[in-house]
Image 1 (spheres, rainbow, N blue to C red):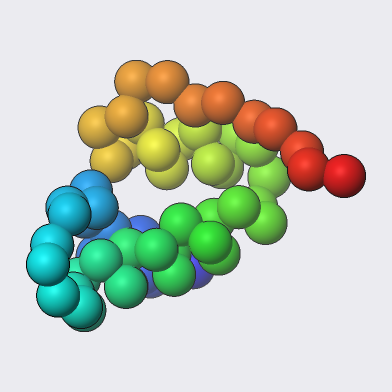
Image 2 (tube, rainbow, N blue to C red):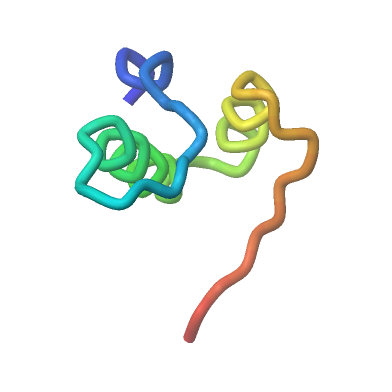
Length: 57
């Protein structure tokens, strides 16, 4: 995971398929399975000031 987190870009709405969005979504999905501290650190590194956690049961 850590070797890919530098490729994350904020998702931008596009009319067509975007390889950049697809890669960013895959990286975010992988991040979801990491420890909370790692998620917060990574998200803050991407420029996000808030991180929220939730579970769907």
